[in-house]
Every structure is written in C-alpha cells, then in structure tokens.
Image 1 (spheres, rainbow, N blue to C red):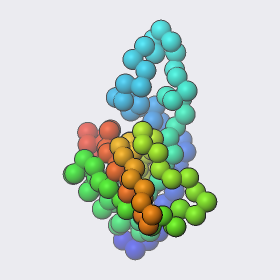
Image 2: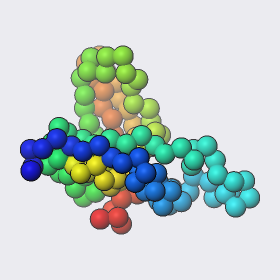
Image 3: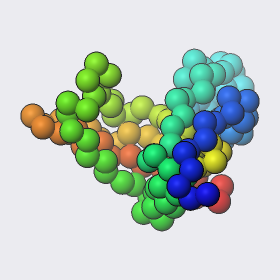
Image 4: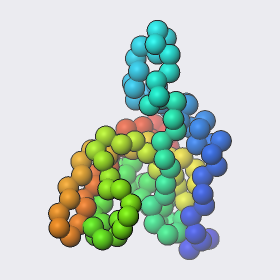
Length: 128
C-alpha cells in the first residue's frame, strides 16, 4: 500500500475544504459588506509531494510539524513551467488525495542552478 501512487484529489472535496477554511486566512474581512473577492472565490491549485502515498503523507506530517519547509529544485526541471511566486496559495493533499494544508509561498530564491521555495502552512495544524 505504501508504494502505491498518490491519488488525485476530488474537485468537490477540494472546493468544500477551501470554502470551510478560507475565512481563517482573513483574505477579506469586509466580506459582509463587499461580497466574496476573486481571491476567495477561486480554489487554489492542489498538489501532493512525492511519487508515493507514503512520501506525500510524510511531507504533510513534516510540514505540519515544522510549520514551514524549503524545497530546492534544479532550475532546468521547470522547463516551460512558471517559477513559483511569493504569496501564492495552494492546497497540499495527502497520499489519498485528501486536502490537508493550505500553504503560502513565503519566499523564492532563484540561482543559476536551482530554485529554493519556502512553503508555510497557514491553515492545517488544527485540521489533523
């Protein structure tokens, strides 16, 4: 079971997770007056770390324990993909594809060989 591939999250479950926990981020404290902002309305991208369910689960545990982690990826691994941007929100899922943590990219450091991306759990510890 541990070596099985990570499962993809259910879009309905992701949306429900986002709607339940987005208020904790205080993205729009004037929602009662202004309505829901675009930032609140759109569910952030979801992803799992690693190739196996065990790796994904271990990463969720590490992030919840430490509060933040820095991932270093070779620059050429991004290919045509956009580099990470500080301030971006995402939802980290466990190996079963269940949403576990809302993350923010705190910092991005790009060198000639690598991209260092610091991720911080902004909602998650109280969910486990």
